[in-house]
Image (cartoon, rainbow, N blue to C red; front, side, top):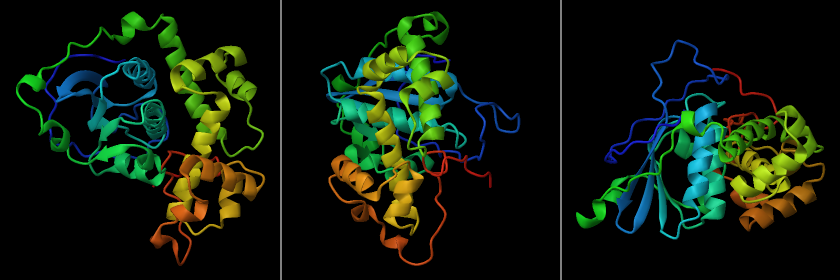
Amino acid sequence: MIRTREVEPRGAAIPISNHNVLELVDDGLSPARQPLSITHARAGAWRVLVLRGEIDLDSAAGLTEAFTRAVRGAEPLAVDLCDARARGEARMPLLINSIRRLAQRRPDTVIVCPGGRVRTTLEETAIARRLTLLEDARELYGRRSDSDARRVAPAPHDGRRQRGSTSARRGALLTEATLAIEAGHHDPALRLADVAHAIATSSRQLQRVFSEHAGGAFRDEVLAVRIQHAAVLLQTTDLAVAEVARRVGYRQASQFAKAFRRHHGMPPSGLRSPRSSGTARPSRAGCGMASDGRRANAA
């Protein structure tokens, strides 16, 4: 459930927890979870969406709604992730893919994200290359004047009241589709109909969801997820480009290289980290799933 309330954004960062929880359920061992809340603030000319609390299956749908509304505005947009948490590898894709879709629709978006697992994942998936990423919230809030620091009254956004709305239902479908694509991106034959069947909806309805809430088509979403996983492998392992291509769902390395260049403006080898010389290392599964389609092993 998403709760919306007005609070003053803080500059201090809360460290991102990195528990290897593979299920989207509370295991009873972690501290009590804080439900995700989204508040609106001003920082100079920027309209800021401040995220606090845990990203999970339910709150990700509300986050999709909030981002969809935000991209329609004309004001400069920023998102403060200092106090947002994606506890467990299975939840990370929900946050990361939401940020990537937001950046695709609003390339001028500024993301405030301190050092931690979320920032590392944004960098390893190369999403950080496509947006402005600030580490310290004071870089955004510190420049505001008293008159600009006024808080913006958020539109009513309560998960219980909006659960039955068309927008909320489609946001929930996008969340489920995100997890299905993450799980199946390594399959070259992955189709819209496969994902629709997996989440119990029609292909027509799911395509409408991608168009309205993701800003593109199903094939664009699959491409983006594959390129994200490829970026992780390129920067954290010594795997040959052809093997990276195979692991993320491409039958031909040339097809992968063409798609990668179109997405990032460089060949796959151009993203190689200097660290990637020497002995191959296993991927840290920055997208939340191992890039061969299996869930990352718990430490």
